[in-house]
Image (tube, rainbow, N blue to C red; front, top):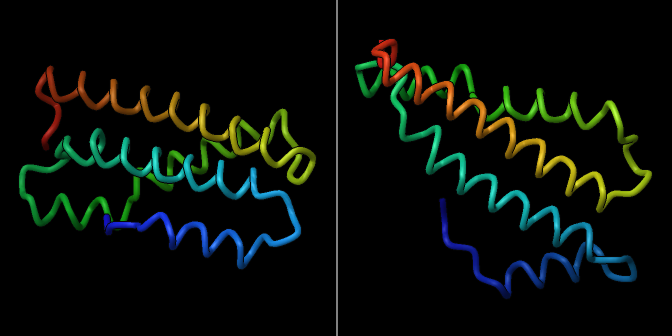
Length: 119
């Protein structure tokens, strides 16, 4: 993950959200950065396949992040309609995503502990 300078973030928000509330884009950006960091430090550190190259290819084809996103959006979609309260939606998605990430990480740790992973 590349280095993001705080001035770049401020410039982006001012350019794209001038005259509108910047609470949602800032909350959304913070949510994304935290989720990306947590995913990188959890799921990416558990190999699914013994071969490192095959593991990288598998994670590109079957993205665990995409699976987490789809599950999290489906859950949040049960109680939130897009556009009603964007900041609530961003916060709800963040916490549901983290819960799903924790569950997936725990399952992967158990599978590693009992010897199922890496295959």
